[in-house]
Figure (tube, rainbow, N blue to C red):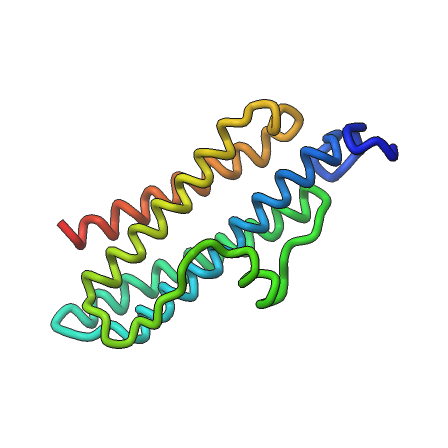
Amino acid sequence: MSNMNSLKTRPIGEISDEHAHRITDFLNNFLANEYALFTKTLNYHWNVTGPRFHSMHNFLEGHYKTLLNYMDDIAERVRIVGETPYSTLASLKEAMDVKEENGRGMATNDMLKDLFDTHIAIQTSIKDIIKDEALFKNDPGTEDFLVGMLQGHEEMSWMIKSHLD
């Protein structure tokens, strides 16, 4: 089994090390971006002000709690693939593509627009990876998992966009 393309039995069944590593690299990047989105959402929850404070505070609380569950699910999926999720701030920060924002003094609509754009970026990355049918040939569970995550982000985007229209 020293050949990188040989099949290896993992918790999900037989999958090549190459595919497992590509999937894990994506999932760990996804985890890092979820962490950034979670932190940004929590930040905005703490810093939102204005006449919509109460409704936005509660709305964002629901979102950051959902994102926390998503992060746990992603890390567990990495383990199911048979690899190790990123689990330090340093590794997450190094892997994230999402730009951090301070949130202090931002208008509510600017916060929501930033969250919306971040959700769209995450959706795009999921759509890009699931196009690779060969990658998921022996791992339809991860493909299905990612489709579920995509649907969750689409719903959150819809809710955020409804506040901006």
